[in-house]
Image (cartoon, rainbow, N blue to C red):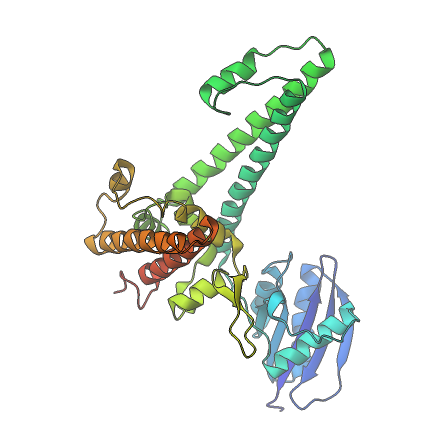
Length: 370
């Protein structure tokens, strides 16, 4: 019985797989294409078991729209390790200009055997479901903004302006009072207005669902702790927890900052050159942290809303949140006084906030670690 490892690269598409199989002795390469169905994926798992002849099986494919379902199905069918790898971290040869599904599967198998791939941490099915809900709520916010923008531009073309704050209660009353002489304008206005109402209701419904989930385990405690920070309420807190879900994979705050793309890019060759942030990794968490960091320029103050959110929370959590608030304020004004753009200062404060969040939520090293 062979004790080698069988390495398998999969180029996964919605309707088919390309499969490439190697072994550790650099033996003959096996390649084929198969349909992407549950039955075929299970059959692939059994086929790989026969080819391995008792050896360990290690499979990989790129993270993409097919998600984690192929990994779970393969590992449930037979004992094997299936890694979903980060596409942005796959090595690329500068002179390689030919890309096909077959070559991609072969490269994945070869890179996996060489240890050159980086696995994306897999969420559980429940974690993935909550994360999808968070992203759907984020999508609804974007859709609402587009619907409002279309309605606003229509009114500008008709030279109609409220003059007050848009989308306030008074503004909505004004919209409901509008009439048009042209029937076509009436139809267009009603359709645009109905879209705004629909997207508003959709966002509110998804927000309520997230708030309900945040009151149950395992989200209740970390969401409550995060709400002690200035600029972080329920939706932002559950976004951070659902998107990152496993803080143990980050050995240090610097690694979390790098994963969120909040660290400066660097091109040092003889002379040190630093550029804008890398913007790699999870953009959803990076966005909400930057939004929260916009409060950093304000002086240290415990507002009534923040005081309410901190009710019944541990003193060490509140102390850490106060330290974060003071540090962000110092960092913001230090950079502003040096002539930096406000966005640069806010991004730096978001990076500081990521460090405090790591200190709070890391299971071994965090403030609330047992």
